[in-house]
Image 1 (cartoon, helix red, strand yellow):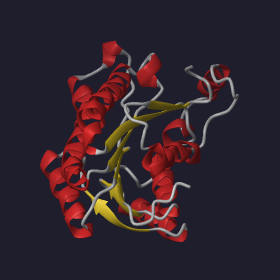
Image 2 (cartoon, helix red, strand yellow; image 1 turned 30 degrees about the vertical axis):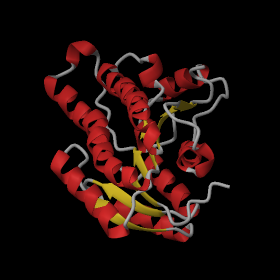
Image 3 (cartoon, rainbow, N blue to C red; image 1 turned 180 degrees about the vertical axis):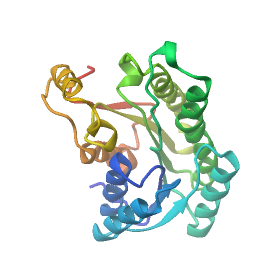
Image 4 (tube, rainbow, N blue to C red; image 1 turned 90 degrees about the vertical axis):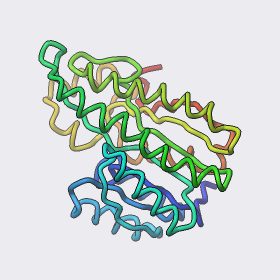
Length: 248
């Protein structure tokens, strides 16, 4: 079950946190994993070493997902060199948290460039090789904030909600070509981002989470692994929530 042998996967923002866990999970299932990163090559190299240790194969693939030309070139080159691209996980994202009154135009532009433009650029580049093979999996990492909203995250929440809309639209556009497009919406997960939250904020999160704990990156990766597998061939346009019951 969940055998990804002979599959080629690209995970954006794969250098740490949820992205790293996804890379390792896909590699452990037999996939060749291209670990994308923008700046932290050392962290990305550590991810790749964990992919190899899990039994997978892979490479580092540096480019900025917010750069349309760089994304097109890198994804197309990967698909050409490996003669296929089976799985794209659009995980790269940023959060610039501010109440609306403090949001700057640059905050909006930077967030949108990475969280929305990036997945669209990468998906556009990946669609062509997937269409040739009449098979493919695109998995977008959204957020519970895109489903429920959260004070202080108007820009981030809007971007993640938009990603869900893009997911559903692309699912309708390419289902007839054998390509499924789904989203995973994590709740609060143990990452560098959440480790900086004050104790009071963590307590408030736990109070809203029926299972009573913060999630682990590996639990999000398990959901991605399912959606990337042949077993999920009849699932498309779906948002799989991994949030401990925070949003039901």
